[in-house]
Length: 356
Image 1 (spheres, rainbow, N blue to C red):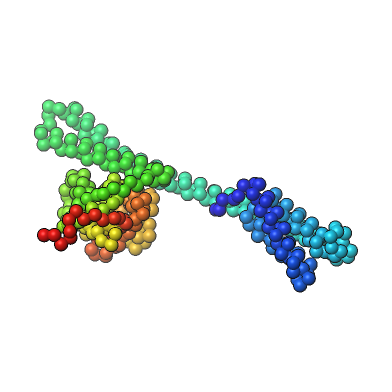
Image 2: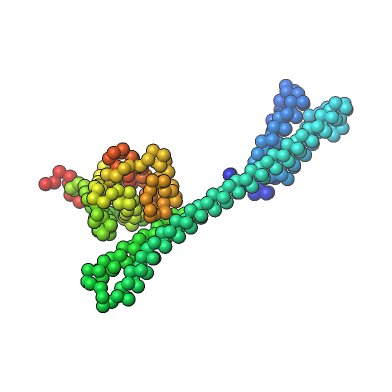
């Protein structure tokens, strides 16, 4: 809904619009006749009713009736009306203008209430979705951590080194899961509040890719990872932290939606003042019905497995768009899905491209 101007501005608008239209009609009054002027002024009041609140509309209706009477209805330049037909027309004009303004204002008022109610219902729905997802996402890792910790403490002398290591790994894995969930919630809060401000600096794309890969070493262990980074890539200007987080979320998403042992590929290109990072997998791809919504906040496909609250891809999109870039997804049936990040950048070659 468009924001309405202030009260003083609304009164000023109603006066200027009515007097301006009346002045224009006055110039051509001999051609169009005073009855036609009434219709034009009534149209003006109707248009104002679509933008202004009740009292400025009532002022426009009253002012237009007085102007029509004084300047147009014979005899001109007096409020006296000779014929009963003109008296009736003037009275009907004033009533219709007032009713039109009041009814239009009431309709807009109820539309506003309906929109606020719909927005509130949507917000409640989102909170319910978030609460249900969080309750599940928090309960599972917390239960695992508590169970493993309790087992370690109660069976200190009876556990083999292998069992002890396995329990510690479970604690670390679930702690990382909780940390990712917390980071996603904080990042989404920063994006929604407009707090994120990109700080572009010279960046080595190869360093960026392998920083993310090293962070996910444990998560990627069950998959085959292929990284394609061309030789002699230029330095580019982008926000290292935001791009790192976007790529991190894409790789986490690829791991979640592909079977163990499948291939995940990361490819980088830098050309035509554009940095392009692709993450493709060999899973089942994205269903056609899900494609328009994969970057929506809290959206999870019906075919998605357990885990996640539908924030990872939405955050990746926010991180990329904050830098003026775009992110897209392409489903390759029988082959997998391919996500593509494109960010406009500047280049700086440390050595000539044809240098051996």
